[in-house]
Image (cartoon, rainbow, N blue to C red; front, side):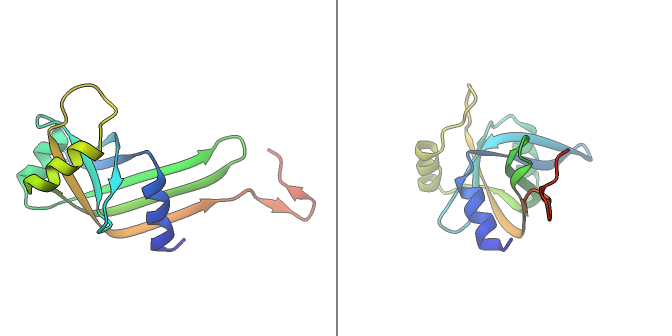
Length: 138
């Protein structure tokens, strides 16, 4: 799948998983997101979260972001993985915009906006395996 198709699928997905390093180990958090006009993935999190600590501790932090839509019965769907730099959004106008347009699904305060700038975008479509006689049953 090409980058444009992968980003289009990601933009249409309601949530994904952000992967970052926490105490030298991988950490994963499920979050909702939106893709902005520049192609950045925007998420909101808490000021006190480990993700916020990680993103604020360095000017830019490498993270991965993954979303998918997979039918477990038909074994079809897609998966997209983005690797890129995560930075807190500091511009007050942008922060106010995302506070209005991106409502977190969890209760509590989400007072930090993070932008992930995609560097590497990969996507895979999952299609059923076929033989000459039709789909393979398992």
